[in-house]
Structure formats: C-alpha cells, structure tokens
Length: 544
Image (cartoon, rainbow, N blue to C red; front, side, top):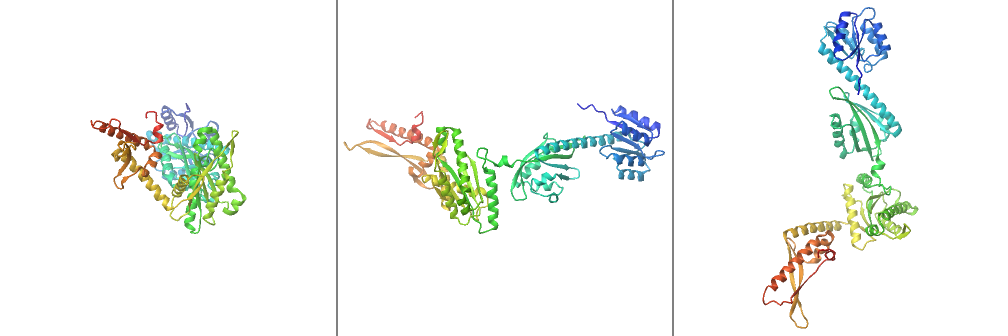
C-alpha cells in the first residue's frame, strides 16, 4: 500500500500568510515545508525534495518570477509542479508566469477549497505522468528483449509516438508514418478495425484491466501481418484517460502456420489468394489456379494404425508436395510463384500463380499425384496413399478467395466420386450439380417431416402354384414439384447424410402395418409374406 504523503513547499515572505496556509493544508493530510524567500526555496527543493511548490510572485530580493525561471532550468512542470500565488490585479505577471512554465495560479485572498482542488489536480497529473514514465520504461525494457514495437498515445493532444521498430514491422521508414491514431487504425484490416477500436474504448472506460488485441495490419508490401497489441491507460484522479502506452508484437508465424507441418494454414492461404485475385483484376492476361487435394482413405489409415502414424503421414505428404513443386523441372515449367498449404485434417491446397498456360495446372496435378504413389515408411510399416485433386482456374468472375476455393473443393469431390486417385477441373455444370444435390438433401429432410414417402407393393408369384406368395415393398417419394421419384433418385443422398436410417425405419414400419392389415382379412393367405429392402447401415444398428 502506498503511504507516501505529498510534500508541499509554501514560499511567501509574509509569515502570517505562510503559517495560516500551512496549518490548513496540513489538516488536509499534506506534509508541509516552508520558505520565506527564493534562496530558501532552492535550498529546500535541492536538499529535502518536494512534490509541489506554492510560490508567491511578490518577494524581496529575488522575485517569484525569477525563482520560477531558475526552477524551470532544472525541473520540468511534470517533475515539479509550481502554482503561483498573486494579487488579483497582477494579471500581467500571471501571463508571464504561465509562459515561463507555471502549472497554475491562485489569487489573494486565497479561496481555500479552490486551492485544495488545484493542488490535488496538479499532484494527480504528476502521479499519472510518473506512472506513465515507469510504464514506458517497463515496456521499453520488455521490448528490447522481445524485439517489439512501442507506441505512446497522448489522448489529450491526440498525438501518437510510434517507435522505429513499430514502423519497421510494417515495412515503413522513419518518415513514412505520422503521429496520429489514424496511422494505426487505417492500417488495420477492415474486418478487424471496429473490434480493435471497441477494445481500446473499453479499456479507456475502465471496463478491462488492460488493452490486448490480435489483429491484422497492412504491411508496405501489400500483405497483412498478424499483430498482438497490448497497452495500459494512465488516468487522472477522476479516472479520465490521459495517455495510453503499449507494445506491438508480430505473431504472424504462429497465426498463419500449420502447427503439424509448418505449411501456411487456411488464414495465410486465403490472404495470398486474395492478393492474387486483386492482381488478376488489374492484369487481364494473368492466369492462376487453385488445387484442392484430399488424401484417399486417410480415415481408414488413421483408424487402423493410429493418429500418431496418421500425423507422420500428413507430415510426409506435406514434404513431398513441397519437394515436388520445388523440383527443377517443375520450377522450369511453372515458375516459383506457388503456395502449398494445409487447410486441416487431410486437406491440402496449392496456389499456382502467374501460369503461362492453364494446362500447366493439370500437369502440376499429375506431378503431385505421381509424387505420392511411392509408399511411406512409417513406424516400420509401408503405408500407401493416393490423392484426389480438384482444380479451379482463374476467372474474372471470382471476387473472393473463398469462392474459387469452394469450386476447387467441388471439383475434388467430383474426382472422388469418379473413382479417386485422379483430378478434375471445375466447370459450371459441377456447381449446378452441387446446388441440385444440396436442394435434394433439403427436400429429403422435409419429406420425412411431411410424410411424402409411399410404399408400392409388387406381387411375388410362386412359379410352382402360379399364386401370389407375397409382396415386395417398393419405396417411392411423392416430391411436391418433381413428381414420383424412384429410389435411384434419392437413396444415395440418404446414405451419405445418414437419413437412410430414419427412412428405412419408416419403410419397415409401413410394410409391417400393411401386412398386418391384409392378414386381418379372414380370406387372406396366412402364409403371405412381404419383403423390404434395407440399407447396410440398418443392419449395423443393434436394435434392428
């Protein structure tokens, strides 16, 4: 707990004035020192130390203004606040004193509550500035070891000092960054800017103990770097923020790298792809391509040999992909403008930029597939894998990186559906097919809720007797817009989505209800049977 009592020095040649003010201020908890002239003033300050000086302007020998001039040669207004005491008719001296560095003034006869308020304000400001200086020193020491950039924002003047390291982290020279908050805010990514401002305001209002924010900032080379900004506010006695100071750390590598393979992750890939799309908008002849790779059978490998071997396989695949694209013959064909990234799981992407020919993307896909044909030796075992690749070529219609990535993903799934271990190039028909499938899945879910399915019963005739021995339940869907659909139209989607279980149970219950109704007829054949087609997934259910 801070038990420091602020020490005030009262300087006045009038003993009665000096002693009366000293007694009243002492009752307010201040420690008081006295001086009757300028010489004693300088001696007290130098030898005893004080926090604030109350200095009378009118004194014999050395005037208060001359004493103030001497003080200001050694101490700044922050280091040693000085409040001048003067008569009401000495406005010219007040102006001179303020110009010379006086912090404030009081007029005689002194209004004591006003004096206490002004003394308190100056001491609070002094403490705040001292705290800021200590904070800045701590940040400076930390930044020297962490290679961070520093910023210091004077909220009252709206001036921000950015350290040379802060500017260098963004690729800027000393004279290329001004001293306004906008130099910072305007460089923040559009998607992050408002959030950062809100986090700053929250700390300034005292809602958070400190300011800390992760956000993207524009580098001079056009890329975005991930930064961690931290800071503390310095407040006056009323809680109003006077300044904020803090540091900036480049955390790009940790934010944009895949922790397993070290490859760029989705964030970095999307960022680079976005810049390539913008560049292609300016150059109509610019060709690029996105390859979306998915390992075939990776789940089975993971389940059979364990996640540790699975991770080693992913690492081996990443190394082969990079090695393949960096090989001499590939670079000769494609150039060096490429990015290999891991999106997550067993999904990888490749950005091929500045291609000479769209067919080069196909050649690259063939090389990558070939590079993965040789077995991986993992944990003393040979592990084979293959890859399905979807290719999306540059097109002026692409506005966002997520759009072309989605289309490459669609092409990859087409490659898997056609037998795996192959590549497919995206075209508009694929998008239509995907949209149709999504619509079918949506309609299928609603069909179960709306009971749009029907069973049709096909007789089973005994060849020996020529009589009906039973029936086969044939499932049909009465689609509200497409009419009657056979199982070939929807069973595959039901299998993929897991809806086949619910659909199969409905089919089985409905068939049982129907055979029960038939057998309730006394004329019905008691040996009548009904057959129902079931999915393999239903046979795996324990309650079948």
